[in-house]
Length: 489
Image (cartoon, rainbow, N blue to C red):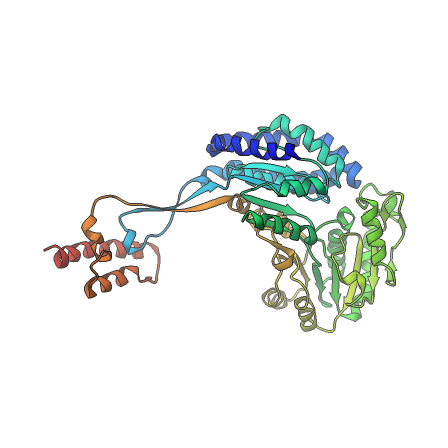
């Protein structure tokens, strides 16, 4: 594994040359990345078709559009993001320059996931480049065609020393994690997330973990069920359910369970036809291991719709499971497939209690026309993100952070949050060597008078706005006069 060490060392050597500190260089690399996505679109479509049966629509909308949007935002905003951020001053620093300087962390590691193998590698890379880092990329070996394609074409567009790709399986990933990095961003399952965090801890490396969990979807019996069922079906069965923020299960009143099954099944036929296996819009399970895992979750379950499968084709039909026991196997782990359990509850109170007894999910979905109920569920539960009356849409808003909480993840990225994740916010105070007599209140020997003045200067003042700044300036001038009168006469 000496080759891995050489790649990481090479990236650090390239970073230490200082090229990435230039905003112009970063923008040039972002534009090159943008060209790669647009010029190699057909190659990516073919690779993702082989890996996950994705059609051109799914590739462009769910893989590429987010990347291109992030690149465009970063190019337009980077000069502002990277500029010094001047902050309010204290009385002690009125005559100084006080600001936050954002500097790159150094050499970061980005480990992608197999379900969206292009987006989960390249989208965080945008933030890493924008912040001025070197980045080692480790795509998921499960989506082998996309990983190989990235390994071939990325060096054709980006600086190959600063942004190398390392392909391989778990053994390779384990070796990569032994190297010291300045930050690691990992997208994937909780079990591997623990391994990543443990390896990072040995080098005191900070991490961003984009994990998952069982994201609940509460359906109020008084909402528009037709609209709700269409949006839930879209969120659950897109990419054959292999989406970390897909609604994992429904919570609803027993009186609407049958109606939900009927309307969701009608929507499935509308989306994918009577036989989804023949639909160009319906995906496949990524491999045989995950196929068998999903089928095992259906053992002993009451399948109300779907359930058809073909192991050779890695096909599992859109499936709905009803009258689900909260302790059943399908409710013990993130499903990550086209199975939708329905758990009945008697009230919103019971739904909130059910959610709060479990690990904090990556997303929470609430379908209701009652705005007070929506706000109450947001206030009384915890999740990485929330979308009311739709599914997964919060992921697409680049002004919102995307990330988990608790066991669903650590940290966040997207838009400016990606830039912040891969930046160090350096506190800077630039003082003059003049006015030394004004500093005497903090020097020995201590006196009661010095103590009172220092405490007054350090005391947090309330209020804000221009009037506060004017008042501070006047107080500063008065302070200087008084200091001269009391201490230097």
